[in-house]
Length: 109
Image 1 (cartoon, helix red, strand yellow):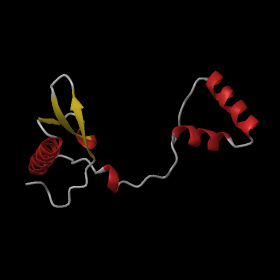
Image 2 (cartoon, one colour; image 1 turned 30 degrees about the vertical axis):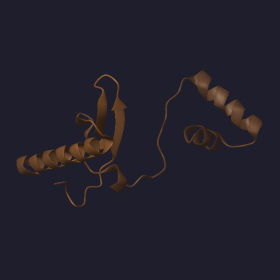
Image 3 (tube, rainbow, N blue to C red; image 1 turned 90 degrees about the vertical axis):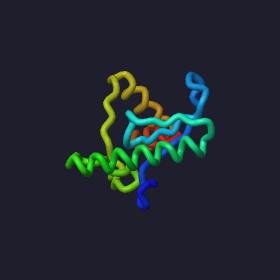
């Protein structure tokens, strides 16, 4: 049975290679669960994560914090080649917006 307060980030996708649905967890990228239906794949990956978290607790290992529970500042640095920086600065100037606003707009698309 899965942890009641499970706040991890799950996704179910079709795996053409396996001819089954794959349940995935962003915080545990090395884990996956294959099953015939998307519902079973989700149930399977949630149980697997639950079991791994229990084992990590028992072994005194650090358990990943759920992405949904993390606080984000809204700031991060991105390094780009100088020619890309120049191109973006020109686009921003021609659009009458700041480079930050242009980059934010492009990243959120």
